[in-house]
Figure 1 (cartoon, rainbow, N blue to C red):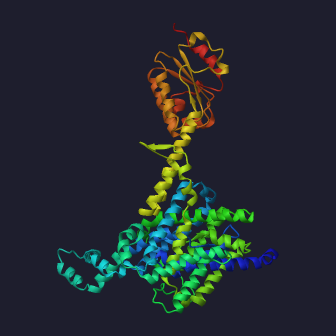
Figure 2: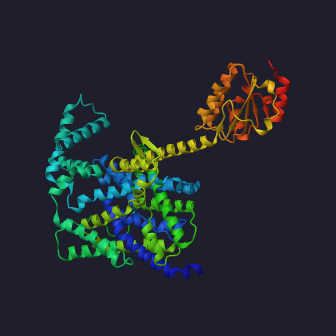
Figure 3: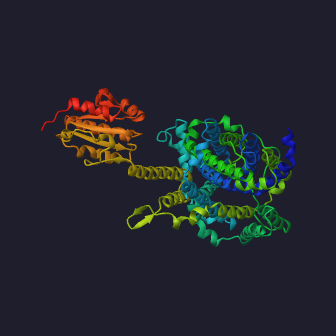
Length: 620
């Protein structure tokens, strides 16, 4: 309790400052996600408070972040599209995915996987972060120029035939669900179709236009139309915001430049009565739990998004633990990774129940907290409470913020989140793989694959593919390096020191082979060559295995294949110095004793040599 009061002044100032920094970003991320500014604020409030309360990093400030919002945006858009473009219909499923992601994070922390998150390869993280920046930057161009596809009459009209087809398809699905056969009761289909109004078709066309214009590819497709229909006022507001965000940093960094831009540009626009487009209205009053998450839960509706929930959970874990490392370096403390994951999971779960978007540890907000005096978890809790107070007291005021201002803030976020360190390193990294005349670094290849796939296809799958490629590249490199050290000698290999007394008259009947290093997938091809090196006239092959510390499944079956070939030629095999792990592997599939009986396994070469002298005769 004494320590609590000792730091309360610094924690209060740090939490308040971090909360102020979080405000414009929470609003912007909420709008960008597709659920509105209130979702961003709710996420910031609950994640900040509960992740601090239960987490393992004392000074961490959590809330919606750019990577988490970008992935959430994909989830939200996909589920809304599957629910006839209705946010309200899709919301229970969306929040259930977010809730599931929180539960997965709690599970990761509970089983102790927090310490393994750091093994995610840097090229995957680099490509992903840069893609996040590109996605945010590109997708904010349309609101920055004041162009909204669903309000473009000419564009919407192009989707009218598709909307009519989709409405008819939904009618047929509805009838099928009711057990009505179209061929038997075609009149019912016609009757329902006639109930469809032009307004229904128009709304469906708007939804299709908005969906087709979402994401990077959608934005690029409609960009020519957007540039012909620029709303110059909105563009000026966005550019002014960007100018202040970067310009004010040159004056001082003690006051958040994003907050200054938000207040100044919004104040001017509102004060002068400019005809701008405000953000969606922020609900007043305390956040209310969305109980429909539980009442409308369906395993079938969630199953397609389980992998996405896992990705959200892992991404949030990586994001948070990287920020924890930054906090450790600044405060000279040591965070508890598993406890941090549990705290993040609790924060995301509660945030989802109240309709918030998911988040993670936020580096900038954490740094601001520490620099402002934050020392304990109380600072993160204060930041969450401050945002709740702002929501209750200033919700109607915040609803008047121009949408273009938040677009401008997000553009600066997109520019800032890109991994310039990784991009700058591209020319200097060693080029270790080639595609014909083109040579590339494997790290660069992984980064570019993740970057391109994330930007133009799917963030979730891109990360998975990047991890698979990185793992394969890693296995190949380790395999090559280990194979260089692993030694499977040819027929004329040098004898070991204890082999000097081997009978010279038995050199044609007995062959000694040495295996040094692990027998695994990277060295099996060399090992398999042993069979070809041994003449069929041999009687005995002695395998010196005292330096073969490890055998994987590939090595195990390579050994089995070799022993089968030798057995066909009536050649006996003796093992010398067989170690514990390889022996265990060979006993599992009965190489021992089916191919190699226990009496043919010797602890040392001296004992083996005695057996050879007693059992092998010179046939020459």
